[in-house]
Image (cartoon, rainbow over all chains, first blue to last red; front, side, top):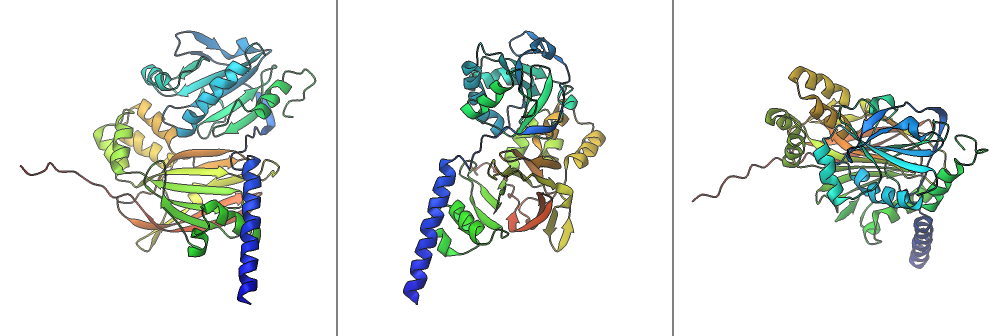
Length: 184
Length: 209
C-alpha cells in the first residue's frame, strides 16, 4: 500500500514539474500581453516639455502608432521596463511607431538623475503637476496606452512589459496596416 | 527562506510555485499561502497564490518609509505619520494564461484587517487625500504619495499587475490577519493571510563613550 502511495506521489510530482516547466517555457509566468480596450477612445491631446528641453505635442504624431507610458522613477516595474522600451524604440526606428514616456509629478532633476542609471533616447515628458495623467484612465503605475494612427487609444497595459518582445511589436505593427481594425 | 502552510512535504519539493501548480491542478479553489523573506527587499513577505492571482505583501521598515517620503517633499512630521502607519509593498498580479479572458478586480474597501480582536479597514488613497488636505501637505508630495499607493480599486487583464504601498494604519510591530477579497470573472473569491506583522521601528542610539 505504502509503495502504491509513494509511486502515486512521485507521478504527481513528476507531472507537476512537467506542467510547470512547460508553463514557464511558454512564458506563462511573465505573459507579454497587450490587452485591447473594450471601448477605444480618442486620445486626449497634450503639449509637454521633456527632459531633453524640447516640447512635444501628441497630435503631431497623427499617422503613427504611439506607445504612451506613464511612470515614476521610484516604481520598480517602471524601472524594469525602461530598458525594454529603449530596445523597442531602437527596433522600430523608421517604422512610424514612437514611444513617449510621461513622468508623473517628479522634478526634472530626479528624471535626469534616473537617466544616468537608465539611459534612453526616446522622449521623457514631464507632467510635473499631474495634469495630463488625469486626462487618461490611469489607476496605477506604470500604465501604457497604445494610440493608433487615427489618434484612438486601442490598447492598455497595466504593469511593466518587455516592449521589445516580437509578439508585442507585431501587435503595434498591425495597427499601421490601414485595414487593421482598432482593438484587434 | 520560504514556508508553506501546506506542510513540510512541499518544502522538500522546491519552489512555492510548484506547490501552487500542484494544488491548482488538484483543488483549483484553494489558495496557497506562502511566507518567507523577499529576495529583493530582504524583508518578510506574506503571499496568496491562487489560480490566476498572486498577491504579495512585503514589509517596509519605518526608516525606509521616512526616507522615501521626505525625499518627495513631505515634512518630517508628515513622513513620520506615514512611517508609523504600517506600510507594506504590495504586488497584485493577474498571472492567468493570456488565453484566459478572466478579468480580476478588487476593492481595498472590502479587505478587512483583524488586529487585537477588532476588524478595521485599510487606509486608502481617498482617506489620505483628506488627511493631506487637512495637514496642508505640499502638492508635489501629495502627488507622489497618491501614485505611490496601491490603487483602491483596479481591474487586471491577464499579464497586468501593479506594485504600490499599502497602509494598514497600525503601530509598528503589530501582528494582524488580513482578509483579502477579489473577483475573478465576476466570481467573488477570498483568502486570509494570518500572522502578518508590521515592521518594527528601531531607533539606533549612539554607542556609549
